Image 1 (spheres, helix red, strand yellow):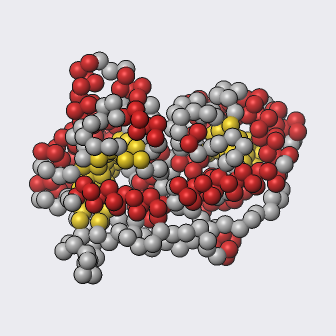
Image 2 (cartoon, helix red, strand yellow; image 1 turned 90 degrees about the vertical axis):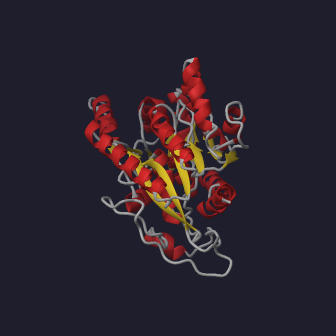
Length: 403
């Protein structure tokens, strides 16, 4: 594999808010994901042909950067391994029932045709719990029927609670499907230690989510402080705890701004909750952000807020840390692997809006400490989550499974 991208890049890249990437060619919206002409492989040590990997998961249309789709986007954008060609196959899309059914049928048709034509050498399947697992389980079993090796990529989303809430027969089916994977990728030691109870075929592989780490220079904070949060939000991610913390923060920093990014449903709820508040003008709903809009928000942010109630390590937190933004989070499984209180961020109790407000105030009162926490978080991301490093490890998994 080519060398991974480091973080020591020119400051001029940061000034423009962009950095160069050479992207692998991917399919268009209406194209069959298994009919792309890939460049010929050269070099004596390369295999005789490029191996085709069908990466299966939700739509990688990054109009909405969140969850599994955000991980897929990084893998697709940063892929540099000429021996493996990634073809993305979307099995789900945020749309109405008719559109979701059409996307699922199209994916099934493309995968079945690929298995039948022997044009898929390996399946890399992203899944979470509930509907995602049930949809993907049939694909796993179909791949096994055709002898196609399968790598499962488990993104927590309360998979443990999902499994433990099932009856005996469904639990047995889940175990059978899990043990049909040649390898299963998990994000943390905690998830590996839990999964080994169910998955006996091989040792689960720990592979943190990848993040593109941008070039960065020290930023002078000017103008009102900005407290940023974005992603798939709601009560489970602490959105409403943030709203309850706002009055206390404004007592000390009356010009502070709270930028909240999310879907239209979150926007509507937030607007309804704050419409009669005197401080409603301090809240800015930025919708779904991506590309240069997201970069601008991260550059402006004085802190990133993720007071989550449920397990998981959102990509938004990793992105904020990669940009050197100090994070205020809660001690839930997943977040604790990245945000260490007093080292790479600040940690507050779940559901405690006053503690959240206090942490925000401490960061705004002490910009030097905030900068130190942000840079420590950035260093941790560069060492554990930098996209080049993660892709090198994923290549090893592919080699083990594909032989």
